[in-house]
Length: 516
Image 1 (cartoon, rainbow, N blue to C red):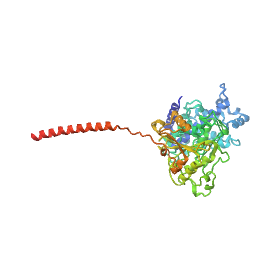
Image 2 (cartoon, one colour; image 1 turned 135 degrees about the vertical axis):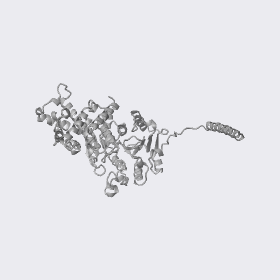
Image 3 (cartoon, one colour; image 1 turned 90 degrees about the horizontal axis):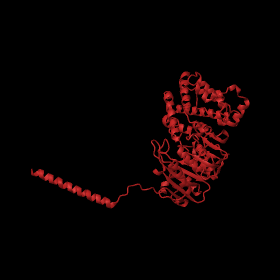
Image 4 (cartoon, rainbow, N blue to C red; image 1 turned 120 degrees about the vertical axis):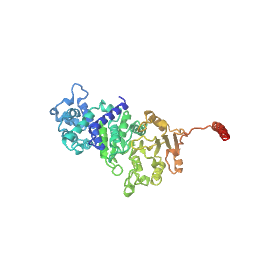
């Protein structure tokens, strides 16, 4: 099954579920329950596979709970990070979902049991609160138990109907794609986080490949604004052949997407001991000071959000921001994230960061930060992407690639916004595999290509007041129609002649009329 078919099947099933339950659930709540059910199904199947160990002669779902020994449970939690009894598996709950009069409370008990199974084990913090957004007893599901059970059953049975084989073998990011579709079609008008700029899979792939380009091994991968974890997952998906020594790290401020990122790690068979996703404000409460430096950093931080900035006098002395001598503007935290990434980057690694175009040419504090980055030779490449790649904005965003091991004092600019670098689609433009590989090829060779790429001496950039807009250095192709002046003059001469003939005919007719 191709990725396009899988994605279409997923969206079709979500629409089917929506037809059954959307009448009483707003888009945001509907999103939470669908994602929670997807995750519940996955960890159930994943845990069953672990217990069965590839032996098709028995099915864990058919076991009785009372035959599970303390030793089996203990070993399982140490390995997987959690435990699920046979009766608690998604498949067994789904069988009787439509007729179970205590479905809502049974699910609440099951989720509590899964989370609490990790108590006292190293995985406790990775498991805790995973089902917090899947509140099966909430009045948002209905005022009566019957209503709650009916809508929960519709979600469970709908998710049961998905047929993707093994989750980890899917061509799509199941939770990420579901999240994007749910946000765009059901939660976009919700007051919470509708309209957030979810990173498309193709852009995530490009960012991951840029960050790990030509690194034979990396110590660990980090995303300071992890969201659903899609950028980290793309790194895993694209670079399984690399030795990732210490795993995947991320920090996320939004509780919902923090849970989603942790779910996604499990969904893609990244075990609890190979990832560390933290909840908190990256700029004010960074969680991984003791883990830096990182050989690969990937990020799509929130565009131009407010932060405390200069209102907190301590921040100017923060080791992340102090070298630049100035803080990012209070109304535009973009460069605060960039400086954070730079501080966490190792001497051999790269950071690939999605950036709002305005930060590359505005004056004030942002210009001073650009000066610091250029004067210290930290920017390897600035890439301008095509417009309308992201859901929620048509802006043609940029990617900034940071490096601490450049062999020259030039900065590369790539204009990848032309039609040869994207595929037009109904809702959003798309980067195909061919487009991604071409951008990476240009990034690698560092050669000047007319209308596409140019490497510029940092001294020249300084003369341009540290303007880093791609359009300032890469001349746009003139797409205007070429006009042959000789042909045009001939056409004008012919037209004038025809007009003269027409006027003569009109004058003749008028004369004849006057004679009569």
